[in-house]
Amino acid sequence: MIIRKSSREIDIMRKAGQIVAQTHAVLAEKIEAGITTQEIDQIAEEFIRAQGAKPAFKGYQGFPSTVCIAINEQVVHGIPSSRHLETGDIIGLDIGAVVDGYYGDAARTLPVGQVSEKAERLLTVTEESLFKGIEKVKVGNRISDISNAVQQHAEQAGYSVVRRFVGHGIGRNMHEDPQIPNFGSPGRGPRLKAGMVLAIEPMINAGGYEVETLDDNWTVVTCDGELSAHFEHTVAVTDSGFRILTKA
Ligand code: MG
Image (cartoon, rainbow, N blue to C red; front, side, top):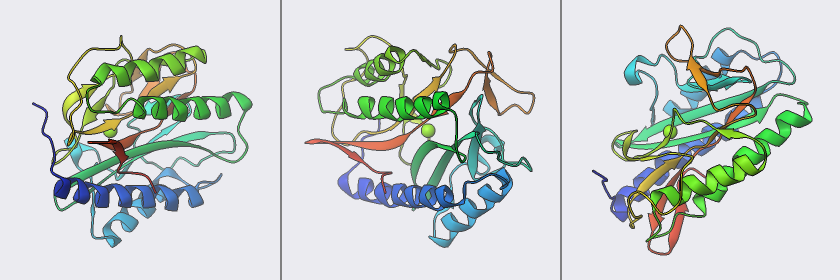
């Protein structure tokens, strides 16, 4: 069941989304070779709590940390650790915050210092894919119009789209209906209506789309060891189009 939100609820979700955006901005300043992913996580948690919000992921299905961190061939859901970032890494940061019971969720993948041209291009195309999807958020369109726009853009660039994990509705729960795949034919799935709030989140691989979960039961990696990138925004469907709740 898709739960539509009132404009009052969307305003609260915007507050949560804004804190997520601010947390991303704080972390972007800290990302450099040498810092550990645990240090990054601690900065994020302190910042979110200082805003009077709660980290959404900490304790979610037992996840131990505030930020899901995915480096290089890691796709999503990596656990912060004593690992040090190195120049040339790409680091995916997925952050959620809760304000008055409502969730905001956004991810981005950043370069650590100078990265390869190949890595740079993957980041650019993945972020572009997210916005191609967001541009389809319009009353009367269908969910798979978003999916198809993401897939077309990523595949035209020679990349593949992760199948195993998908975007989602969001509200009083982090994961609500509908699911939002990043692939598929257009014109299918539920029609978009004002008040729906969607977390759109392409996970794009430089190689094949197959992924597997490591023995820690969280970290998802590409099967072929190639790079992966992840960008996400929480987006409300409005009468006139869309509103990105997690932008700065
Ligand atoms: Mg999400």
